[in-house]
Image (cartoon, rainbow, N blue to C red; front, side, top):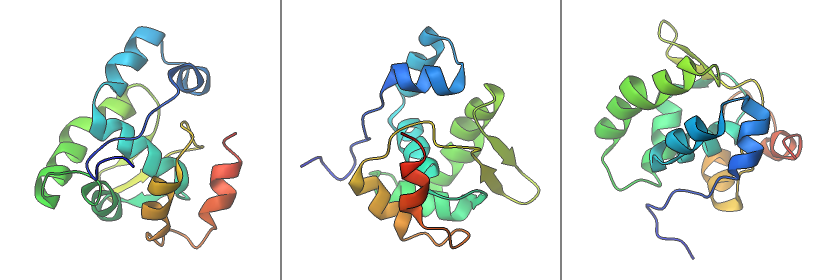
Length: 131
């Protein structure tokens, strides 16, 4: 059983195929555990997802406090992913939009995301469409 602050594993080849991010860039992005966790949460939720709810889900699995997670997401993780056209981060509405799942989410992350009421869509339907 993984430690509470461990980030899920990502199939890098699948990520590259779904995002068109070059392999070396994908490895660099996915080296950050918070980025991997963020992608897992977003891949299980129906877009758009408020950053507050994303922060709650990530902080629930991370060993940092919510404020640190929020700062990291807003100033590092989300801008990097947006710069590579993986997601859209709307700073005006403070929401994140991931068009489709880009990683296969494991059950423990899906459970965290399942506690987040996004738009009422069943998260298992969203996960299944990623495979």
